[in-house]
Image: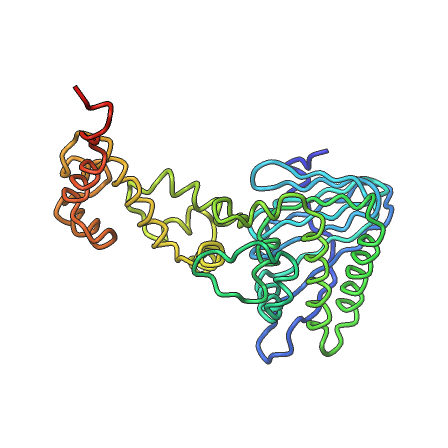
Length: 334
């Protein structure tokens, strides 16, 4: 059951809101909807200005739910837990008779609470998984990867985890309604509980944490766009615009996953391609430079040397010298 275009543009149901900060500046808002056995389906839109820069969570206690994503859909039969990171959710539809909660949380709120975790709390989740190169051993690293990935967790045979999830969403809903002092702290603790349940049960999140298969949705989209446009020498702002995100959020995603800022990854991709062409192509260095989008071969040489400590021509000669067959081998005997 996929939400149609009319459904995605229908008015949103009224949400309850609660402060999650006690600062004097206007705090970010959390919204929560309780759906409880309605006679007809319910629909929400996630592309409005009020819901951008937010993560979304659905606790489906009974019935069916379908989330429309940036690419494709994610469906679940209750009991289940759906998690949609920033930039991924487009719409949500739950069936008639469905029961559960729909939660919308600013990603900045999640990031703030994750940053307060002690390192040992993260290492308990996955002690055998090394930190990405260059990443600090901060307490939120493990759950941060969970929060950056689309998840659909089946709770049908997980009664204990279902009870924890129901308690967490119930507490969040109560705090949103009451809006008492310190509500943000209570809500943050419950959000960490929800992410921990996903970390326990999601089958593929550990694979996503591997440095060669990062789980950040923003990072994956960035790498995909980078593969298409790295020869055009886009700057970071160009990539952020193409992804529909901010430069700050893009930098945050790449630093969390790789320890490198976006510009470093862009340059890495250009250097990688340059090395492949220098090694495998008979073209002159100047022609390779033009093929990589450089207007000035001299600038390409300086750029290449800055990253490899060698000029392109010298790098090519050294690489080919190492590939020459050993004339003293048995095969070279007359």
